[in-house]
Image (cartoon, rainbow, N blue to C red; front, top):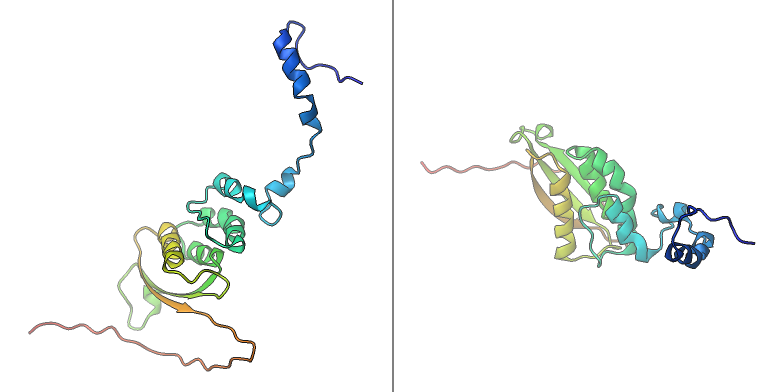
Length: 180
């Protein structure tokens, strides 16, 4: 049974032929909901989904889990860009953890508009300098523009035997030397 045509009565023969040729396309099932979901989108379409959400950086060598985390956090990062929360979100989207200390949280108080980041990268992400630079670039893009930061990188490790450790809080002081 033919569907009624949506073309006007004065449609050309070429327009009618094009309508017949593309008639089957309306029956192709397209799961739009799955394409716009970071968890269910096919891997080959993830770059297009990232582009549509204005993700500033995208690397092909990232693991699939990191790509999906980036897409999941894109909206919240864009909403809070320029805040500490967005810096935390962007680092989390790389599969890493951080300890962030702002200038007023140090004793004695540091230089205004500075913060220190201790970055811990997990074992399930690339342990390369290029990947760490991607994280630094992400922090630079989302931090408040007037702020400057220092970065200390760490690597997380896991063992099947069991790993125990003791955390000892440390106090550090910035030494200044002056020529007399």
